[in-house]
Length: 62
Image (cartoon, rainbow, N blue to C red):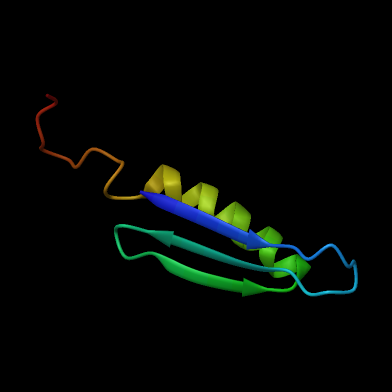
């Protein structure tokens, strides 16, 4: 349901990028080391809060 794709070139001076997507519509892009690290944390937090993975209130468990 959620995908995180990170591109980190082998050259240390090259700029890494990341894309975080989810079937619920979550779609984020980050460029640069600090932003890629922040997006990685946001991606993990989203996986715990995603409406497609979190049971909705009032729904009966199968």
